[in-house]
Length: 435
Image 1 (cartoon, rainbow, N blue to C red):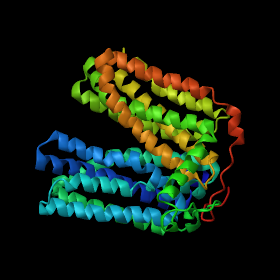
Image 2 (cartoon, helix red, strand yellow; image 1 turned 90 degrees about the vertical axis):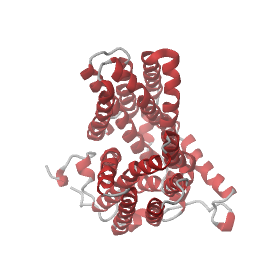
Image 3 (cartoon, rainbow, N blue to C red; image 1 turned 90 degrees about the horizontal axis):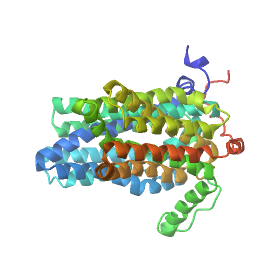
């Protein structure tokens, strides 16, 4: 079956749109670049300092700006032409990677490495809100679930491919070489965005006056707070959307706890250290399976029940992992949690894109996306304490029970609210003709 006659809502259907394929190319290269240099960065810092604390702090420097500055990224995505914002993000990261390569090659103070890593993450803050806001303009509404599914699949694949490519580059050369190659990936991403023909899809459409602020830009200081308040108000106006964002945060929290608790599961099942890797590989495989199911799930007439079922697919296997002793079963259960979590992510993004006014979407998404990332951090921090207090099995029961309890809360969402969801505008002129 070709992409021209693929069923609506599937990944293949979303790939019919030329401009969306360019956007995906930019996203893929950019996200692979985000993960590609992480291995070289940690190797560089550890070789210079011989300190696990320094290595951990460097990794944290890449994550914290997403949580803290993500809302600002949403403001920028709603304020300026999104094509220019995305290209600026890529060019800034390209320049910072060349600076990091110089730090590695010239033996400059290692404290610069985490600082540059934090700056690179900061420069990326508006990127994902821009991608999420542009996607509904590049594909028809019926194909939006497939578009979000392939975006999520690219994110998952980048986590695997990026470090693998980074390892190859380290084998072929020094960390400086890896950073320089990474800089080029961001340049390629900028070129892909520039090549997207449908420029109108990137235009910001604002119905409200710009809030007063520094230099009339409406960003600092009162203007920024006003922009963020508008994004928060848009979410508050849709309680069902807030519940779905909460579901995504719960899945992120689950993933954060898994980074600790699956170590204990691998021990109790006799899988050992390798089993930890097997289970996370299964989570990734389950996530890819979830992307394949997203189109069918999105066509349900009871979207909140589907969301609740997806949460259940993540929470129930977590409960079972507390008692399972068979290695193969543990790997399968871990994969099911990945499937459920990926479905929740895709369905949440699709619902937000269909529900929120596009004038404020970037700011609302700029609040939701960092909240999900924060869920990973909170889960990874709380999991050791839960395990120490309740044991590994007890911690899994608490975490799985919390996810299932939230699934019941989502179930209470009024399914008839979906009927009030405004339909997104059809894709722009470069889409394939209607069948």
